Length: 74
Length: 386
Ligand code: SF4
Image 1 (tube, rainbow over the protein chains, first blue to last red):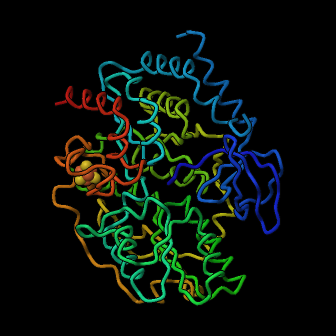
Image 2 (image 1 turned 45 degrees about the vertical axis):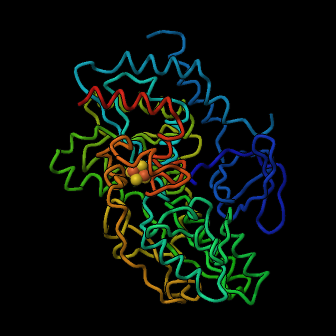
């Protein structure tokens, strides 16, 4: 039930809603919990609501941190 | 493929291997590490990706009570069934909830089979839409879950109010994560066995999206337990475990945030404001497995009482005990594993759940049941400890 997933916003709809895509599947979700959302944003979707926007820069930073150990420096 | 960004890169098997090697290199072989993943989403991810098999034997994962279906007490399910059986009522709930057992043989699904109008919804707003489309019926939404599902319920009540929908109400059973963590740290078992039982927490992903990382600072300081908030992908969990191992090795107990792409210190303020507008703290709430906990759940504020199914139907929740052989309670507190239950995979399976931990794929019993590899490895780890 808590398995919320990252989804891409592909269209903004009237009434505080947006169309999102997850792995090829389209879904309409409410954006009532977000201050602003734009087409191209990635959001976490949970029980029909976008809970937050994902920050692409932070994602890159985390991946870079993780990659530090990849070279076998240990 | 469209929409797989933020997913695939956090499942890279090579990176997972190197993170696992790094954890193995940094653990102190002369001690054990016992980390609780609070959240059912993590329990599910850990099982699904076979994470225990990547970990050194002296690092053990303990499953916490953060599966919303698992902590739902049978009395609340019975209350929902009693409301669903009232004339003219349509009761809506999230899918997993329908299969949670109340008394023997009783569940919302069974009530539906006997003619009650019970519907599965994917969003609280669907229940509001049903009420709008069926003004002659009383539509009740059975709202359960932690801080992730609470803002959607608040938004649904506010939407019903704005649209003047008068035949919509909510049976509010929302619970609070910090209270559950507190109860684990304060439980009589924890006192008896000493708080050394747990060396740290993998903090919830999406609960923390809403409440932020700040509420955990108290636990880190007061109980000297490290907390690392982690995303739900396998690399996130491994990364968080490495950070926890480091904190333990350095003797630190701080809140760290591994899931910075979604979690901030303050969380989602807009969602928090909606929740505060609609809900207030309950003095006490009975949890499955954890007992009655003070200030651990929410109820609908008096100003919204017309949307409160408890006020509208005046049907109280009966007290019902779990199946006598079910170990869900001890499992939810991290003291037992599904393997310790005599009913596991015998009388109790995902098709015929006897306890709530077997219902949702986030429940420890269902996770063990579905992912055999995890099952074997965990059993092996436990055998070593005996
Ligand atoms: S296997 Fe079933 S009966 Fe046993 S603890 Fe898990 S849910 Fe309860």
